[in-house]
Length: 296
Image (cartoon, rainbow, N blue to C red; front, side, top):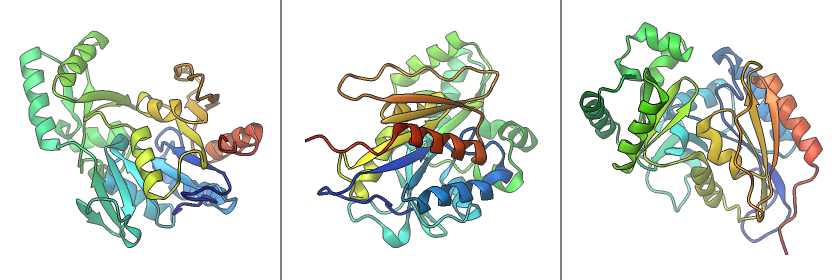
């Protein structure tokens, strides 16, 4: 929802903005997408805009926007390695879109899937690591793993900046891979059932860029972040209010203590999906009260 804030650069009223992960937070099943659209529109009608931040690809997120019947709005894809933006309202300061689909353009902040593919093959062969690139699985296995039907599963393979892995080794081997990737200026972050290899982009940094392009100055927005996995950590830890989702059989992800100069309220919610997500967001906002005014 374009900006939705009551003020841009220069001051004025302060508002809440919600930024949310998609899978296992806003959605549990792809069929819930229309309900997710209703939940997002309901918040928008109350003057609370929501920006989506997902590990999904650009093509997947465009499909989500359309299926949810959402108005044109920015979104983050591939864990913040890319930003999607409506082409009709392209920010003047942004680079030209690297790809266009329907009414959206993709801004890739870093990453080259071909380079990642080649490097991961080399590291697997030389280090005896056990993993598969998602794209190496047969298509039936891909659909079963990510829980998507054929059209959406094919969109999940259209990577612009990152390379997802199906990890089949132990934690020690994963840490070894992370050290090797760090030497190449790359990282590996867990999200859902996959490990995502990419440049060191994250959702919090990408969100800061989006808010800048929307004209929202620092301290004019109070942020509620929703997420469930390690790839949401930076987003949750940078928010004013962090809402951590988790299934009943798994404890909520523990966040680092907030810095003294940036207090943070943390709440947890069991289960995701549009109905549970909206109830948890509304309860957290009601408990937190009005958005905090900017410091003097």
